[in-house]
Length: 169
Image (cartoon, rainbow, N blue to C red; front, side, top):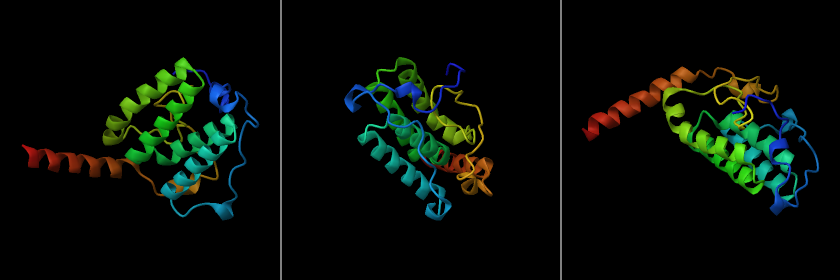
């Protein structure tokens, strides 16, 4: 969380296990005709594209897809954690200390953030931006946020925690 903005993928540019090279800086967003039906389905598409890019040695594209997956998946606990876990793995592979520390902090903060609605819409999840900063949602992902209200989910989760607490006490 340095407050500085680094271009997508720059923080991981030299991953030794992937040849240390990035072949492109950003992937082309998927055409609208290929968009998934739900945010969760598109999250899975972005995670798969990230894995594909990583295995091809294109770390910048892998990070960009992870950032897009984060934007889509942060409202769901397990996808949110999985995205940060992958970001942590790439940061460690690149031996990037600041990004590694940032991802560890984000993994710890993801659970209370999920429960209490600390979900800054559009945030890419990388350590080069504030963890609490809302950011513009890419236009091709914007339809997945139509009608989304973080507080509806927060009230639901608080209700679940209250019921579970009452049962356990």
